[in-house]
Image 1 (tube, rainbow, N blue to C red):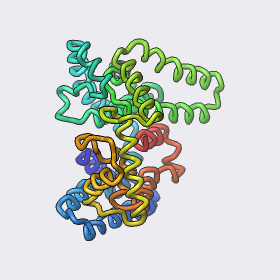
Image 2: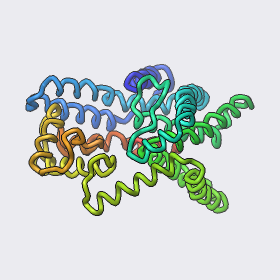
Image 3: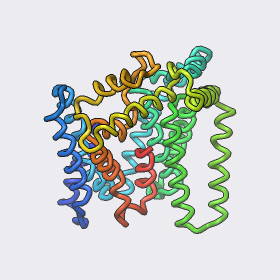
Length: 349
């Protein structure tokens, strides 16, 4: 993903000079540079400077994000469609292999899902299951966009391929996907759907779209055993959170415990955080202070980018990160693009 962002950024940079120069706003660049400098400053008050340096390197691609936004605008619809088509194929292949593996061992994996364990991603280059769920969601909303809105490809073969990949990836998501990917997918689809309804001002289309938005996940629930188990597992986790039971081995409940632990750290260091390299260490210390009932193995970091950023570098850094992600929404040229806005909502979730 870092390599992809850098390549997209290079396209954006080159396009500023080769094509008609768009009116460039410095705002996204100022936000990204300010965010990066703020986080980098945390290196100097981090005890674990080796980890601090690793985190600083990991955040480097965020400096190029504004250029990636410009590349999105500069690429033609046909060029973007080709990129999306290749990406959808890249997601389809490991998803198809993973689904075959799931159905071959269905009983075992269904039981795993009930116990908050993921269905493994086979042929997926060692990718984490949540990352793959998010990438699958991007593939589905992008493919859906080109199935519905794009008329740049006259070839029926390309259109049929887009439909096949989008439908397949959508089905695979409801078998394999982590909750994060599914929630992000439906948030993005709802956003794009609402934008289209308000733009077209067609009431009938809006009613049909809302109806499908309700019917499709309900149908998926009854048709996918792994999805039913995931919903049941989520319900159990919510019960644990509400009734304040032992959260061990309950995925969502453990996250809530981690968020509460992180919030205690943020209250103590609201402006500068604990240091970009010391977030994990301070989380473990706070678990001990709070007499957490979680076993040492289950005492994880927040599993939330904004909360983790606030722990490491303070609320200012978390706010800048949020502003950086949502910065295209401030521009008329960008905030009317259904695919871009839907993608931003997906990343936000």
